[in-house]
Length: 294
Image (cartoon, rainbow, N blue to C red; front, side):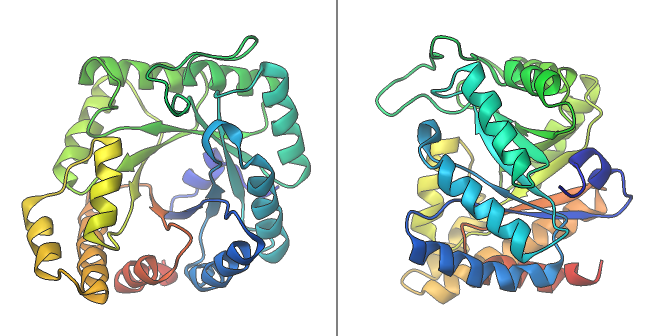
């Protein structure tokens, strides 16, 4: 099953991880692994895979992770898992099946409300909060490594930044091994939030999640959904490359590399790249930083 998150972050070296999503077609899976072959040159410490709304792509998620385990022996993997649309028994069955396929870690999230609904309502026999999912996993699958999500710019549903950190602390107290953050583009936001987490008594590794900008249109859509903001200088540089896809990708990779370089100086334990199933931009960042030689 490979190493679990607690051991990965206790190893004393920068941990690099990549997040995938399950393609809808077999051709998409083939393309994903063509890109993953490139990314594997940077020796990731683990790979994660999401699944679709309400668990709609769980089968493909497991198929992707099974193939990662088979093609890259020794690379630990993690499956995302949410409370959406699942009873406790269904969650337990999924985790057991994932473990059989070699999955040793779970990224535990409450999940977004189903499309068309404004508030999250658990199914009968299900779980309401991410903290409940962490506690459930720690009880039913104690060998699993568990990561949870953190929000440097505050979760869009949180009543306040303080309440958001209280909820995060509760998730950690239930047994999370690490926190992986939502994407952000201003390191000052992350560093202030990390200090507030420390003041609240959160001591597990806090890992910045990085999404190198591929295009201005794409990043505007993503940030509008998650509540992140674009620094003015980054926005100006992207707008200056309007109509030039390669130019926008280069700007995004440059900004991300600068971000990670600054964060390394601040002692981050690892960096988690949202690669969107492609390799060019993340590869540019990793090569610029020499991460294959860490």
